[in-house]
Amino acid sequence: MAAAASSRPLLQPLAQASAHNQDGGAGSGLAGCGSAGAGWEWRLAGSGLWWPGGGGMKLLRGPLGVALGLVLLLSPVQTVEPISLGLALAGAASALTGLISYPRLYCYFRECCLQREGARAGAGTALQGDLDKKLFGQHLVKKVIVKAVTGFLNNTNPKKPLTLSLHGWTGTGKNFVSKIIAESIYEGGLNSNYVHQFVSTLHFPHAHSIGQYKDQLQSWIRGNVSACGRSIFIFDEMDKMHAGLIDSIKPFLDYYEQLDGVSYRRAIFIFLSNAGAEKITEVALDFWKSGKKREDMELKDLEAGVSLSVFNNKNSGFWHSSLIDRNLIDYFVPFLPLEYKHVKMCVRVELESRGYMVDEEIITKVADELTYFPKEEKIYSDKGCKTVFTKLDFYYDL
Image (tube, rainbow, N blue to C red):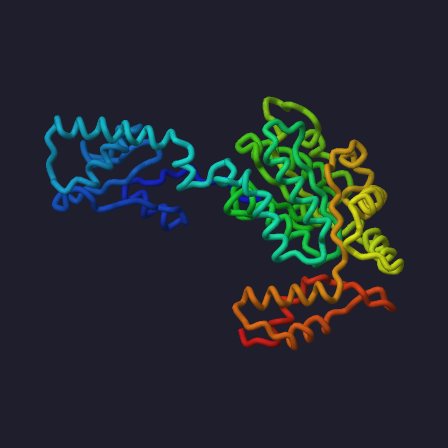
């Protein structure tokens, strides 16, 4: 989990800024402005302007201090008449106050807890486009994710947070889809301050610390949703999470208007798990054996079976979970095992992304190097597309 953001002023006296630079701080700003002979050094603080005088550095607070800094920084002369300075300060302070109070302009320069401009209207198109270009063999995923996310973003009064549980074998696209969802809402994607990732084996490794993890998890979610209602929480390796831990977030996923003054209804929770993959493969194989097309599978053919399989799996973080028992998971999204042709598609796209010419011979060689199951039919890649990227390195001098 990311550390708390620093409250250090953005621009400060040069001496302080230098110290902050040495310990890893930003130390950003303009220095050496004003009278060169006097050696004045101006730095903008979080709420005003530091200026030299009276035997030390003084802070002029508020828009007036910032405005004075702007006037002095931009002025080509070394002396300013009091009346002219006063008029300039008034105008600059007024303009600055207006600019700062205009959210869209502020958020143009700094990330805000707002959807990217046009995200609502374009979320469906952007999601569909990215999934069509880079996700293969997952017609159910594309349909469910686009409709669920777009509908949720366009709903001005949701009754509960959006909860998606993604299930399937390694390399079928679960992490990729969660990344695309984050990018459709925040430009920073997974690196956004409002997107939070948890990996079970990293963040919750010890069974004897479940009580502590529950408290920490609740505090983290409560604090971040208080700061940004449109927060996104991604839980990876749910199949490796200790049973009972995830139930601690149940109140946040329920149909409460508010909890202790905080509404969680605009947040998004995404769970990633390998649990249920056996059931998905079983259904997919039955379709194949009966001569039906893979694309004929519908969500209703898989969702109930996956939900039950995960709920009864003692090795799953969802084992007998109240999140499933109380129907708080909106969609169980099945990721089908990938076939040989899908692996070749992955290799082709990776070649293109690296700027290489598409070489069908290399594509075939990489796809042939992977192993497939079941043992007799050898239809599905046992690692999906996960290893094609490293396999390609063998054929190219990087």
